[in-house]
Image 1 (cartoon, rainbow over the protein chains, first blue to last red):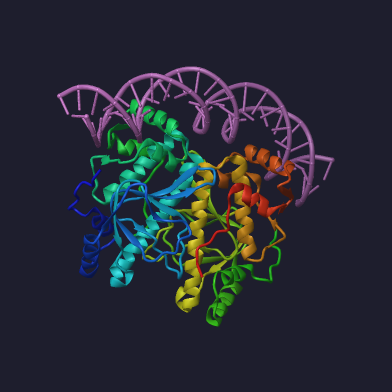
Image 2: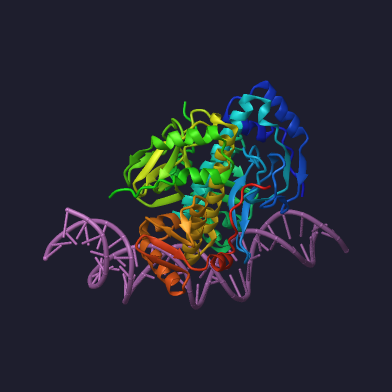
Length: 235
Length: 235
DNA sequence: CGCGGCCTTGAACCCCATCAAAGCTGGTGG
DNA sequence: CCACCAGCTTTGATGGGGTTCAAGGCCGCG
């Protein structure tokens, strides 16, 4: 198993989409990304309760923040995609409040300090705000949506996020997860995820073959779910 | 309906529990709290998508961040208790990513700027980290706990938070919400909340009469749920 | 005393979990 | 190039946890 090459660095593209990057920020990011290292699928990037040394940037691959229950139940809190930051906290001696696991092979690097430039710091803050918004969406998804809605909703969210980074074209994106992982995200069993995915296929909402997912009519589906694009900033 | 007096300002006590407050911070907080104003139960403190003018501090009463679906389904994202901050963001032109509603009458004031003192800024950051931790707990609660566990778990979390502010003694605290509101928090119907509460009563985990809830054996219950105290900071 | 809001209870139903087994697929080695 | 294998997907049958609908009881308040 090896990573596909990714010369368009999606991570930087995503951050740039959150706010203008000055040259200082861009240079620092490019240097950081160049020094990225590989973490194998299934390994823990961060353990719950661990002290945070310095924030990291996902350069390539998918990860997830997770919580495990003592009896083995597992819940993914959110997905971490290229351009997402891990372990960004404002206070001293911060402890990780959740573990982070690599869902695929992941390329990772230390995130340049926010002190590099005010523009970068601003982008970090916007990124944090998006992360919070996605956590809130996850809560309503789990609390009030049924299985069919959960699957469709989370796929739309992923599409929205991947589009920001330029990783999708025409509602199509690369989806490297198993249905079981998807279940861990939306609080369903793998069996039921499968049934709902097939229903969504039959009803013509999605196409999903191998690692590619296409959402056929994004606008109509979003409308049906009452979803509107995530916004954290005015002006 | 009127608010009980609260000369021990729980809000300040809670913030002080998050980290040392220097006199500048303490003075600013006391001035802010003194100018608190009343917001009636059921009114919106903040609407989703609204531009944040300046962060607020809950001085007294309970509020909740909420999301509504187009068909009327409602989900509480988290509870806001005295000492909690509303609308604290690091980036410019921040938009509220969720509405905030008063669940009881609420006393509210503008939060002193973090620039007041580094100590205050640190406490704000710790508060934000706790809020994130509680959001994550909420996700696993909704995603992987059954109804009985959800109820017990959220009550333990509330106890933990109220204890921080000195608002509970011996596992007992004032609970001003209806069972329907509790259901909106844990993603259950009011009917089923009621059944689970009664089961928890029968099994001797809780006592709940009127506005007072007592958790009989906190340690045993926490242990049964695999709950450990929320920590966001080392040292 | 009456009324509105909340709590409580019952019965029926449905969504999703669980258990089990059978296909499929992509990757590996012979 | 084919055979094999592990992991993932798919399908079926069954049961249970939670919802829904409906009605009755309780309590505080005017």
